[in-house]
Amino acid sequence: MSEFQTVARVGEIPAGEGRAFRIKDRIVAVFFTDGRYTAIDDVCPHMGASLASGYVENGAVNCPWHDWSFSVCNGTWMNNPKGKICQEVFEVRVEGDEIQVRT
Ligand code: FES
Image 1 (cartoon, protein in one colour):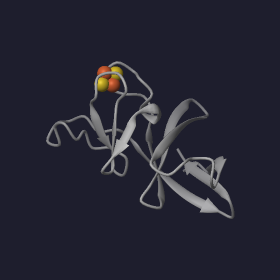
Image 2: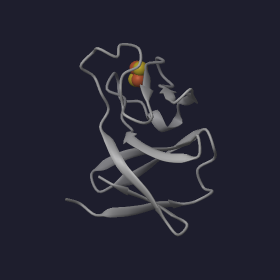
Image 3: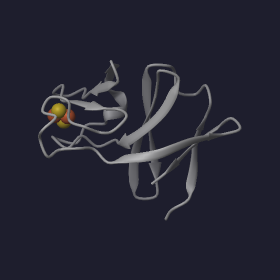
Image 4: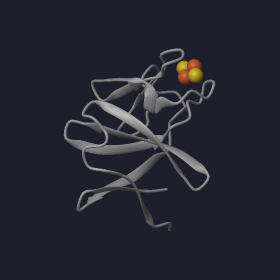
């Protein structure tokens, strides 16, 4: 199992927004919504846009290119919850003022 990596400090991700971070060979989108941090795979499975730059609303991020929507908590494809597409989810913790993600 991999270890947690520090990606940012508390306060660097504004409420209701996401930021993308490279962790080893991955790009992870970390969101700060409803007072907690969550992380999913940043790469949209449709055509590869960065989900971290999408608009976040009601616990979901809308892809900036074609508006597919994914839960920032569990990666579910909200446009088709019964579909097979689901973004990978990563564990997030806050240690002191450091936001850490385990890929
Ligand atoms: S690239 Fe994300 S919906 Fe098309």
